[in-house]
Image 1 (cartoon, rainbow, N blue to C red):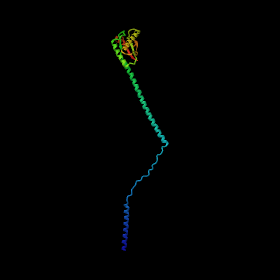
Image 2: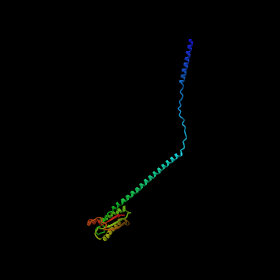
Image 3: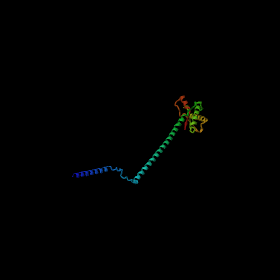
Image 4: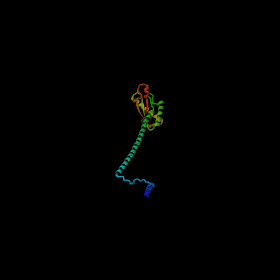
Length: 212
């Protein structure tokens, strides 16, 4: 009886050892390599662009080209407007300059009932000749003869013409081209100063110069 119990215990121990060994063996199994797997990614061929998409892209290209052409046209208009403005400015400058030159032509004065040139008139005509030659070489200059209020209208018309001719002749001797000079007489019709005294009359006996 005692022997049977010992044998039974030995068997139980053996079974326990075997179970432990199996457990240890199972525990020390080498780690299996873990390979990360992704879902299969299928590479699909590009889908052909449908007709609607092609039409949309074509419309975008057309609009871009129209915008480019419109911008070119705008720049061309601006450049043309700028050129036109430059021309206008140049023309305005020319218009402004001519009166300035004309105002530089001084008036020559005469003695009562005379068409002869005084020394001061000769000096004035010398200055005018220099201005005409330098700045108005291609312009027409009209010489206006004037008189004071004394005497008849007919007499003063003739006297005014004589004064204009005297100025014209002297200018040609100074180098001004005769074809650029013309004369006219206003007699006593256009006084420079109103009045009936010597100070007014002296200002009205004159030859003036007008750029045409």
